[in-house]
Length: 242
Image 1 (cartoon, rainbow, N blue to C red):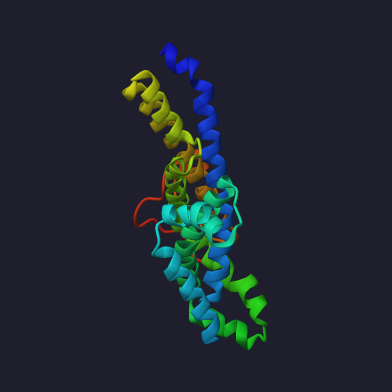
Image 2 (cartoon, rainbow, N blue to C red; image 1 turned 90 degrees about the horizontal axis):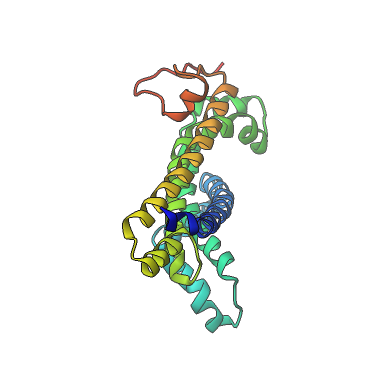
């Protein structure tokens, strides 16, 4: 226990780097997911082709391989060296953004066609249709899956130690080598990863609740903080949009 207390600042520094990687990756992945997801629903074949190429390429390549390419191969090919931290965030965002783009595309396509036809009959422009009718409903539908992707991105940051970044995984493994205290060290790492994941899940569920309330849907039973700490029960009715 005394050893863990002495090394606590190193755990905090590693966890902070993990959080920075996670938040940076989330922002980039969200922007890419929304852009290419919406692009994948456009009628023009070229727009859909561009979205498909992005999704299939980065969904089919491991984030670590993309990271290696940015850090080691890109300087050889172009002479341009990316910062290791930026390269890691870029690789994570590109990888998870490809998965997110499919979530966005499928959520938009799940909006009832009758509502879209109604917006056309009201002479709404495409931006108006997306902003006022389609995206609010699609946003509420895509958030639960986005929550899973956010946690997956956080866990994917554990590979960045392979490119020399001193994240939480690197700190835990380094302390194990130095002290031989395998179980206590990895218990602390386990607890910190779990805590970060729970905070992310809580934030996504808060966004999910607010999105449903804006659509006029009745929140599931068990409101307040406790309702955000656990998912709705299977089969819970959430009402209908007003």
